[in-house]
Image (cartoon, rainbow, N blue to C red):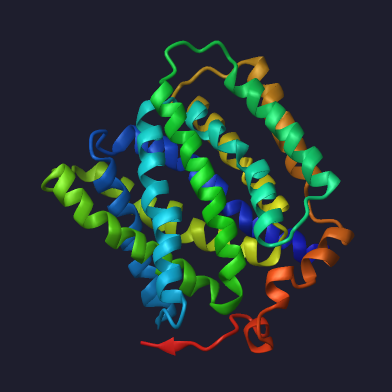
Length: 313
């Protein structure tokens, strides 16, 4: 039980960091350069992780890195950047909180992880809390911003479960580095063509990009994919509800956004959903067995921490 709680605590680093990312992006980064912002967030973080792991893709991971980089990085980062600029911090982060239910359903289809009753109940309670936080009567909410945030949620839910399905044949740090690097390389030429030369950045913007790349991306994605390796997707998805909690609290404390009694009730429900979906003895037993996908893999790809053959650069 204690070991699994440590995995939950490690995984929680990701949604907390992502919750702060909305505020940092909204306040300090250029509003009219979503492609540039996404590229600068992805590529440096991927290169830092590559320097740490010193591994290059092998076998099927060349095309898998491209697919996951496109979903989890290129498309996702651009959508999140746009949502962060168009919406208040609290609204942008809470729309993403629908992801636990999406992750559970996709995990059921792709990795044969049937959601448990506690996970479904936690998702329902958490979503109820999200609705309370969103339906605050705040006027002027951008419809394109909400659509961008919802699209980011769906793309990331599918991409994260796809990464979980493929993760047995590569080290977590390496596969995260490959995804971020591939996504950044996809974005760089598109940003140059669509947005022109890079904008002039002042010191706060440079520091903000450093935080976004190293903390909200390199550290956060490594923690998140580690959690997906060791915990059921339903538990990881519910831990992701800490994203809106962080976004709302940060928006209130730092950005001066109003926190109502209705939002406080919503936050309490979100936290209750996270606690309800924590790993139990039954879920730990289930997550310890290979899924239908993993049972079909060769034994050498299921054994060891990283598994599979690795080529070092």
